Length: 258
Image 1 (spheres, rainbow, N blue to C red):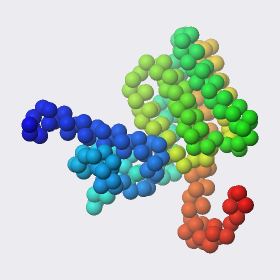
Image 2 (image 1 turned 90 degrees about the horizontal axis):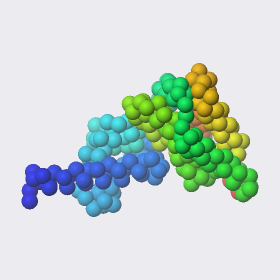
Image 3 (image 1 turned 180 degrees about the horizontal axis):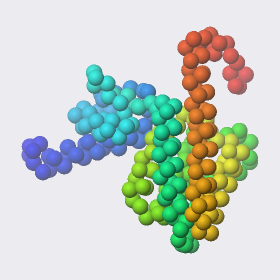
Image 4 (image 1 turned 180 degrees about the vertical axis):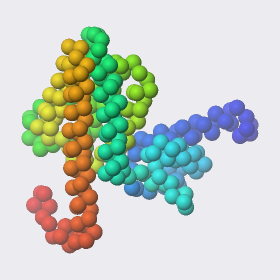
């Protein structure tokens, strides 16, 4: 059966889709970090397929903004600039405040209220775990779980606006923000409690069908997250610059465990 047959075409699409999902997962999980090169040879060996579907998947990821392809066909995970982060947050804020305001304009079903409350309570449980364990902040696994609950809370709120296009756009921007935030530090108990309280305030405004207050609280919540993200970005950029210019300073610095 040749490659032009329907079965051959399905096999080609299947290989491309497998490659896309495999690379996408590696990026979103932080296995391949921002700025890192993506090896077609390595991926082809991992999946047991040729490099052609790998290239096709990388082209799709490049069109989505997750990968950059250089003139020599070398692919790297895209790295956001400071302005990119600001632009993405502004887009998210504009869309999400509108969607949540619309969601607050009609009664909230008890089932949706229960789901939103459960998601937010899960965020508070991370704080309780930190306090009980004595750990200063969430580790990488904990942060990954936190992000899932945080995304779930916001996504369900947006779904209540019943606007599929807004949901897709917001999911795309939050996905980009999440991907390039993998290197962020783990949240401590105080920050987790702050996020929980902000979510609770938004949810209460939706329950009380107060669109103006719901939109305002979502806007403040997103702006707060942006400030935190930019503070970390600036610190990482400063540290990277110092490492380039005075690497010996970091070589002699005591480790946190010393």
